Amino acid sequence: MLLKELLRDVETVYLPDELGGTETDGLTEDSRRVSPGCVFVCQTGKSFDGHDFAPKALAAGAAVVVTGRKLGLEREVVVRDPRAAYARMCSNKYGRPEDSLKIIGVTGTNGKSSSTHFIYELLTAMGEKAALIGTLGAKTPERFIPTNNTTPECLELEALLRELVDGGTEYVVMEVSSQGLALDRVYTFRFTAAAFTNLTRDHLDFHDTFENYAASKAKLFAQSGVSVVNIDDSYGEYMLSACTGRGLTMSAAGKDADFSAQDVSVGAEGIAYTFVGEGCRFPVKMPLFGMFSVYNTLTALSVLTAAGFDPDELAKHLGSVEPVRGRMEPVKTGLPFGVFIDYAHSPDALENVLTALREVCTGRIITVFGCGGDRDATKRPIMGATAGRLSDLCVVTSDNPRTEDPDGIIADITAGMDGCSFITVTERRDAIEAALREAKPGDAVLLAGKGHEDYIIKGHTKFHF
Image (cartoon, rainbow, N blue to C red; front, side, top):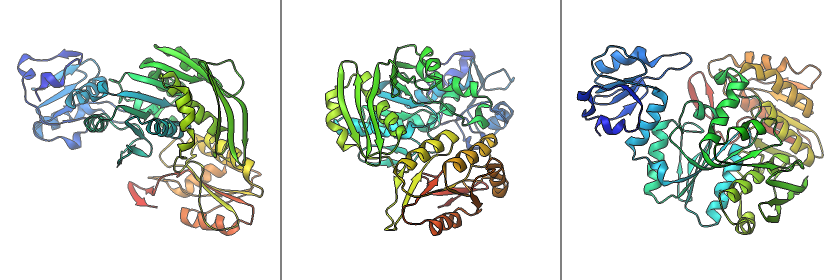
């Protein structure tokens, strides 16, 4: 591809005429992946500056380097915004596949995976050619495609969308993470519809402040034709103010909203409510646990209705929706107590799942959990306090310690657990065994934090788990 084709609609500051006709082979923002003939785009992060590697990239055979400031190099192009430029260049490389798709995005701290799963399941049940991209990877009814991030990096994402378009996909349902939004991974997208679930403390290791975190989430609603916002959340109005298209509201707490869950019932048999919105009204009854499941299903029904789908069709296909893997997932053990797996790894998510578990558990709740290393350390004692308050016994253990000492992470967690009943077991396998040995008939054991993940990260190595 010619460089001028790769740079189509990129705002350039300096582009020598002789470079525009350069034939390019490859595109990267990672200096370790520079190959002869490729284009290297300099990015700036919290702890690195890609401009420092530009001369080495040229020496390694890069055809051109794209920078955010003039470096005086022989084959450089200067652009206004390197991150936005890279997103557009990745899109151009793969023929702008997002323009051929109807994309539904969901953002929020908790509920993204379940909400997008329900949206995808309903679309598929209604006969739409749909795909899902999120924390669990990417999938269509025919295949599963592993991905590296909740919202994949630009080049990976565009390649994936190209493959989906070529395979006949019409709808893509996406979890849109705050990091993905902050790093402009979906900069070139115009979403058909978007939804906001909630906002609680998470990812401050990346965003530094809660205000930055909220602002990153809000970017989605400036890129959507219609948005549905949960106004039961304290940040609902903030997200609503960011909408540039049609902004609609939803509530399960009795607030005046465009979409609502009324007559809500949550118990051991599952959830039940009446979905009301935009001239429709129908009963919802599903074998799912907890109030958070009310919100997740309400999000799916609301955003699909807002996107123009017939509510009667949605109601007809609700019974075919399967629960999402690793989200309040019961494990069949044949033992006289319950075992559940959940991905909860923030204080709010842990509180939600433990509150839901209390509604169905007749005995004690024993919670196995930890906190990830090299991530926001300030939430660790809060996680400890939350788990300790809502559990009868906690087994505090490892959860992807990465480069940190796992016992140090555990000490940070237990600092918030004064007066709570807990034990510490560093190795997660041993911690799970300890919890199962402690459980008695009628109890419930919650294995929190890992959810669908089948690995544990120690140091820089990912081990199967």
